[in-house]
Length: 631
Image (cartoon, rainbow, N blue to C red; front, side):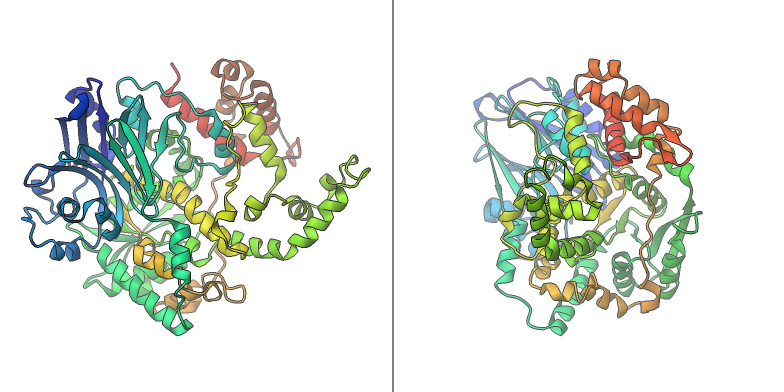
């Protein structure tokens, strides 16, 4: 686990400047660093840099940039190739000097070319320079576990694991991409390939970028839609077969992720996914696995007792940390430093806290991320199934409300909320993304008018590409393309790397993901039972009564914060004078909206509307802006 950065440029970027870029990611790799600059053809110079968190082969033989014996290939890399030992056997003709997976990347490229990526099972962001072809490749893992940004302008390319090195690069001007803001305010994250800056992009999950003679070409070597379609041609024959094979693949995935030369543990919330992963890890361990949970003093939110019960049953070495609202509040100011573009999923705070706890004891932690998206676990999937059943009726209601007279009277706006949502859900490209229409209106209005074609829609208008009639499956595939990499994996990566902790996700193993596409949907969502097959495997390890309960979760008290200790800061950020000078948002609209939002009465908001989600997204953006752009 590391951070990488570099450039392919005709500009004179010095070794000292490259080191300054690299050192902005000290938290990602405190154990070692390396920066090198190479002359290339056509007047280009190539800079490669890496900060290292040592996990495998702790010696200096794992130092990066790393080169092939013949000096043809240079690599900087962030992540883990879990099947590198298997690949190493196929590459026996290469003279290996280390026992780390970075060198396997070099040997594999020399034997198979860039198509070697398809053989890698892991999480990775790779930059590779081939002196023979004078090409540079950037590669990101299949589901986007590891981040990779790039700035391409005037036939020069700068890349990095985070935005900070790119911001530090000489000549970077950082023009904010206003077109992404409405979507960000609504979704609370910015999905690949967009970023907060013009001409700066996230390399999409499962993608390869090639830089050659000043030009770039980007293509996918793995795609959610294509992998799903391919798997559907060979579905699993029976439930028993599906369960047995899935269980075996999960065992293999966990075992592969337990290989490390540093202490390893597991996040344990007491839910199905983390409990299952922990149970399998304990099965593979000769000593108690170190497990970590966050607890809350508020009894109605506290799930630590359930995690403790699972830990007792499994016999793990369990550590709990009880936190309160003030503990979480103290992390608010650190959000822009480690999430260096606007990111407003407030669960990042609890994730940072459990990462901090784990890092006091281990360097690597297993997590259960991916279980909800791949096995139908979110509550939204139930809502989607209900919405599909009511869609025809909703279309009829909408049609009636468009009749002369009824339309003028805005009858549809006066319908009960649930009816209004179903009736208004008429966009075929976003059928599974229904919600409160006034949130959409406000998210757009906050940014104001933009040049035609510049503003992104707040929803992802792509659903027809999946070619799936079942709305649940369609929404799951959409989440794998958007919410999972853009929000969940981004949140975990930045929160864990804040404390130099590597987080590994067995459910996101390539073989597990691709096998999940072969499992009939009714095995995942069985008679209303979400994640049915995954739960069934968990019950093989843990008694049902320890797991089968409503999930409580703990939401950050955004309303309380924004109308309390953050109120004055929010009002300053939204003052007409500030917004007018900033020239990003619609100053009059946003100032009025936030002023109304923070006004409270004895029974709650005097305005009768709760826009805490949009107000928090706005607050986080302004906090980020203050950190990186305020003079």
